[in-house]
Image 1 (tube, one colour):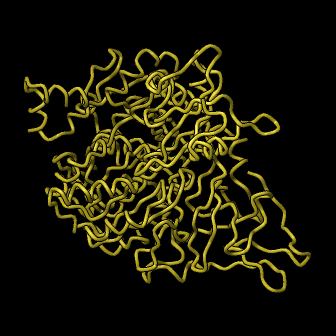
Image 2 (tube, rainbow, N blue to C red):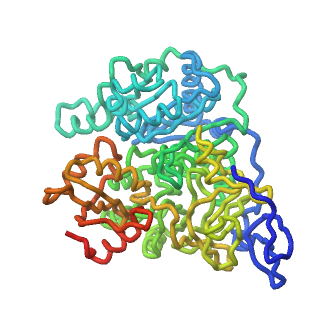
Image 3 (cartoon, rainbow, N blue to C red):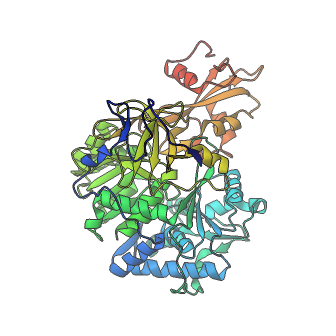
Length: 600
C-alpha cells in the first residue's frame, strides 16, 4: 500500500482526510459527509461491526428461526435447523479429510443447496473459500487453482468433467463432485429418469459423469460426523474468501476478503434496507450467481443473516422465475437491470402478480429511468441502484430507499463508508464538489489486498494522511446531496450482462488465429445487456475475411462464453498512440460512428 505524507494545498495548511473534500473561501480543504442528510431516517451514519465470523450470523438465525425455510431450490425447502445440521456435517467431513485452518478450498457450483452448505462448512472450520465460475474453461480453472494454491476442489459434476485430467497440472489433491440434481425435490428427480427427450435434456444440463478419481459429495456426507461445536470459530481478521476479479488491470487476481469485510457489508446492507427491523420476513430471490461478489454478499451472507428465505435459481430464466413467484412470492430481488425489464415484460404477458416485491437493488451497470419506472409500476415497490466492486465486498454506495433515489446514480456512500474524489493525474488531490475525479473509497468492507500480488495491491490501495483508500478507476461527480454519478472509466473493461470482460484477454486469444494480424476488443452499447463485445480485426496477409462464427469457435476453449465477441469489424489498421499503444477508445468511437477510414 502506497503511503502519502500530509499535503499542503494552496500553501495554507495540512488536513486530515475524513470525508468528501470541499475547498473553502480561505483556500483550506475541509471535509463533510454531506450524504448523511439524504439517508432514510432509520439508517445510521455509522455501524458497529460485530467481532465475529461469517458463519455466526447463520447460526444465530438457525437458533432464532429453526423451522423457517432457509433455502428453497426449485420447490425443495430446507429449514434453518436442517441447513445448520447439513453444514455441521459437511464441516466435520472436511476436517476428517484433513482440511485445516487457512487451507484454500475451491468451489465451482451453480446456485443450489449444496453450494450454500459447502460455502458455510468451509468457513466454519477456518478454511478459505475460493469461488470459481462453474462454466470456466479448463485453462481458466487450472490457472486459478494454481494461483490460489487450493488443495481441495468441490465442483459441480460438469465442471469436474471440464477439469478432467487437468487436475494433474494443479496442486489439488482431492476433487469432490456434486450432483446438483440431488438438491431437487424428489418428484423432480424422478421425472429426470423418464425415457423422454425433455427429461434426458434436462438431466444432461444438470449432471455428468465425473472423472473416476473424484469423490462423491453425497456419499462423503452420509458417514460424516458433525463438527465439534466447541471448535473455535475464525476471527474477524482471518481470511474468509478469495474472490477472483480482474480489478482495474484485467489480469485475474484473488481479492482477499476477511470475515470482518463480509460481516461489515451484510450489516451495512441490513441497516440500509431496514431488514434488521423485520428479521425472518424477507424472501430473497437468488438469481445472481454466488461466484459473483454481488450474489455472494446479497444472497449467501446478507439473506441468511436476516433470517430470510433464499429462493435459489441455478441460472436466470424468466419462466422459472415466474413459476417461483406464483409458488413463493419474493420480497427482495438483487439483480442486474436487464433482468428487471425481462421479468416485468413476461409477467405482464402471463398476468403474474409481482406486487409482493418491496424492492430490487441493481448493480454492475447503470439502470435506466425507464427500467426503474417499469419495475416500480409493476410491483409498487422500489428499484434502486448501487455501486461496488469485488474489492469492497462488494457494495460501497447505494441509492436510498426513499423518494430521494435517482436512477442512473451510483447513490450515497454506505454507513461507515467515506469517499474521496481526487484529481485524475496525481490521484491524491481532492477536487471541488461537482468536478470530475477518480473515486476513492474507505470503509470496513474494503479488502486487504490481492492474493500473493503485492505490486498490484500497491497500485490500488493508498494511504493518505493515515486513512486507507482503494482506487476504483472510475471517474465520477458528486452532487449537492452527496450522490455520485459515473462519467467515465479509467479502466477499459467491458461490462456485459453484469459480467466483466477484459479486452486484453480476448485480444490475446484472437491474435493467435492464423487469419489475424492484429486486433482490438471494445465494448459498444448492447441494449439490455449493457455492452456487447466487438472485435476490430486486422487480417493477416492474403486473408480476405474472417467470420464471426470462426472467431467465437476459436476462442470458446479459452474465453468465458459471456466474453466471446458478438460482432467482428474488419479494419486495415488500428489507431495507435505515439508510443504504439492501441487506442481502444478511438476504435470504439469509430465503430459507433459507423466505421472508419480504415474499415475494409
